[in-house]
Length: 86
Image 1 (cartoon, one colour):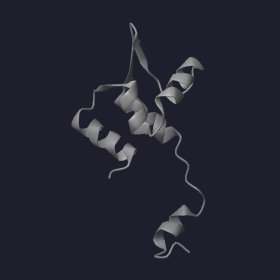
Image 2 (cartoon, one colour):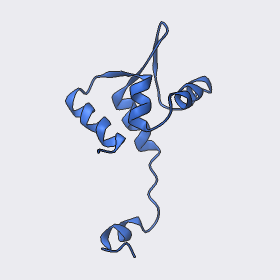
Image 3 (tube, one colour):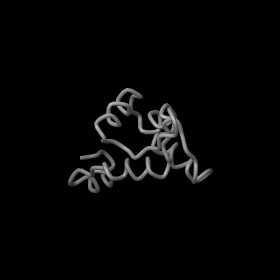
Image 4 (tube, one colour):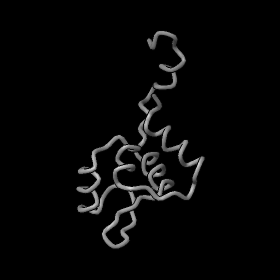
């Protein structure tokens, strides 16, 4: 099973200008719909579009949002090179 972030990248490559629903956005970010709703209410989280009552997320914005929250622990590159992770 692919990681949700990889699924988003695959979808972006297939259709780079796609708007997705909040349910799809939550799935791609591996978050709950209620967390996305709370973040919108607090004016946090990924950028979104509101068209009437419909909320839509632009896939490239979601990917950029996810990338902006990526954390690489120090020494992680040496961990990845070690066959046993030690």
